[in-house]
Image (cartoon, rainbow, N blue to C red):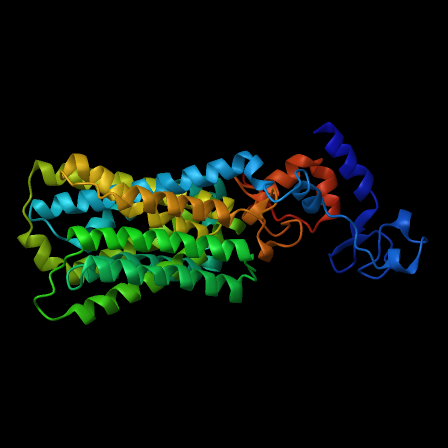
Length: 425
């Protein structure tokens, strides 16, 4: 590491700031694409070269197509994705158990999650910013978090509602739409450009999910109550819910790359609690009164809330390490984990196609990262070349860049880092 720091110091010593804040030569008369001062006079070709950036040097610490596979971040990303899939599957298991107890109040069920997250993260945000700082943040960015919270609440609500009308097979197929929404939004608004290996990886993962759905169809576990003839309504609800999920995932990836996680979770849960509470009061009043309450219901609700809250706490870390697209790809293994849990809880039988499908999805995830460099998707294109507009938080590319070179030197080479973006979380 010491040799690497010396390399950064030597190669970037002439890098300064232009008057307009861009990184480049410290001589103001030079054009923006000029090389550092030490190499200016060699040739016209040399003059057109751009200075080596700290982020590029970090990316080149390891060479080859398998560079990202030799980093600890790769293993954390894959394992974290599966932990999230298991946590989300556990919430579905608790929902099924609640149904067996004749308890079905979907909006209120999610409301408890927002209450818990708000109780944890909003007071901590107030502590970190101070009451005046927190109020200024809400005044400045509150409308953005209201939109994020609204999309999250409605995504949860419409997906749960869809299963009352359509089959599980239809809902699972439509959930692929969330991946499409994330990819399109990231491409158009966040300037993300996907490598061919990423596209191939996503297609293979979707193929693995198709095998899971096919095995469910063979074993007859894709059924749903469609006797009312409202399957089209359920499919539309699922499509709407998947669209809201895609919006939420893309928005949350953007927010946690520019703001501390505790602020994002605190604000999303604060406004989500209000929106979900109003929605539960309007649509769940009759269901709440008719629900059967006992000790098991209380235990299942507690388990559901804890698993969902764990999911919400870990998801931002995956968004920082990777992307909203990979997050949704990781969720494709939920059906596999659902059967594994169901073997013990509901005495399911594992079909022989399930292990094949799971392996296919994991292989797709490996291919997704085949051509990635050291920083991989943690290096967000909307944050600048050296992630200067990002937050120095856990698992961010900016944190790794700053730690690879002296912080004072990094600050000299990049735009000014706002005080609100220096949090370690």
